[in-house]
Image (cartoon, rainbow, N blue to C red; front, top):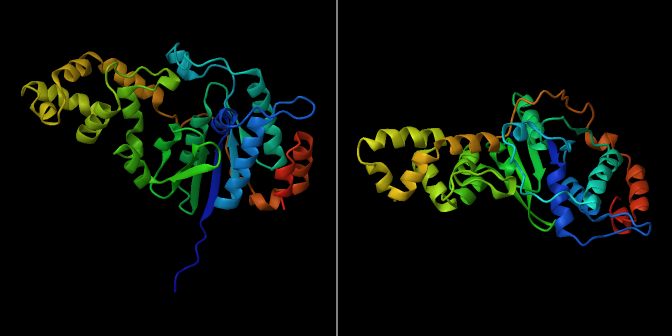
Amino acid sequence: MAKPTTRKTLILLDSHAILHRAYHALPEFTSSTGEPTGATYGLSTMLMKIIKDLKPDYIVGCFDLPQPTFRHEAYEAYKQGRAKTEDSLVHQIKRARDVFNAFSIPAYELAGFEADDLLATIVEKTKSDKDLRIIIASGDMDTLQLVDDNRVLVYTLKKGINDTILYDEPAVRARFGFGPKLLPDYKGLRGDPSDNIIGIHGIGEKTATTLITTFGSVEDIYKKLKDDAKKDYVAFRTAGITPRIIKLLEEGEEEALFSKTLATVRRDAPMMFSMPEKIWKETFEPHHAEKLFAELEFRGLQDRLH
């Protein structure tokens, strides 16, 4: 007879990524007092969907802070191309903390680090607990590098705020052609315009994928490239890599390695983390959420709390 599972599920919320996605996916809702509420409505909707679909035992949120991070210190242009966060979204990012309080969700933040780094650090700190499954709920792809077998999964938005997908390792491989650990290498080669990570100018998605699936990590690619130079680049030419791309690689080694570093989440943020002592359901008191939803005029969501 099969042994009953004691596995618990911890949901980690990438708060900013969800709020940003909701803010851009939904109309600009405002309450009768003129308060902007589109992003907080989207966050609340996704939170309730997560609770219904994934049945978490524990839920924890992570926030970005407005101050520069270690990545900005290493690279001044990091995220420079992004427009300034609009005031209405800044207000709702602050308001999101009220949503978390109403749902009895502890939240973590740390100056100098992004929410992704905190999520990664929590994954690292809990890796010895084999009975814990972690699902990271996010609005972007940066957290996919943390997917680990069936222990760490990423639940993300495909479109809008209702169309979701749960990524395990096979799903990451199906989408990119390689495993989660090589995603920073992919960004190291092709860059990431959304974060202003340069990569190697002239190398796009297709070439980056070919290089990684054929030769492995950025470091492995350069080791092979140096060895192959003595043999007239036969391995690279056989893989369909043109002389132009070989030249770009040779000239762009420093950029590729630096871009990979910027794209890699830190698993060692100096944060104090402890697992919640009680199961989330035991700490959630619906009347707190009801009160906040009444204040924000989320009438439809109020009815769904029961």
